[in-house]
Length: 240
Image 1: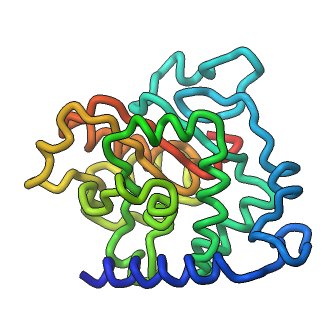
Image 2: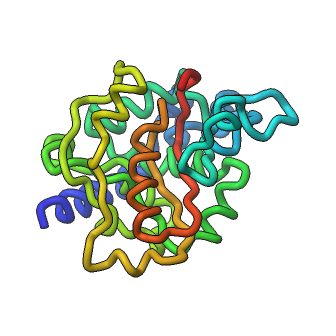
């Protein structure tokens, strides 16, 4: 109940602030949206990415070498931008400095990414990656859930995928350690697992680094019978 109240309050605050005049957070033009059109065009140019893990690849290449050698659990992964200036700072303000008003701007950035709209339209459900109860209480909102509600509110189900336990902070850890941390961290709500049978799922998070979190969540969804899983992330780090 508490997490629903916190998420609802954060969505209302974010929606209110998103309609107020403001400066562009990048170039400080006034008045402008959180990121003005010129800065979005400059810093969010589409680039060729691996269809399975969203790492940058040369033009004409659909999958990176790593995914060809060892295919990830995900069927597809789409990222709006690299985790770099100015988006890394924007996501830090959103997630770590308690600024839910970034959700609308980052969701717009993601929605404008090639192939995101078709993925959302084809999805039966949009599932934000859940936070642990302790992390949710500390932060006051789940950033993935806020993004999801701005992207596709009627399809969002924020209670179907569960986080069973807290994990230590993933940032700075090698992929092998991240994988160990996340073993058994996710599950599908048992009484509703049958509803996933044969469904197309969009799994949403803010940042993808090694893919360990998204792949761990994907394994839980596969066990419940999900037929196709596409991950959407705002930002992708350069190194997996």
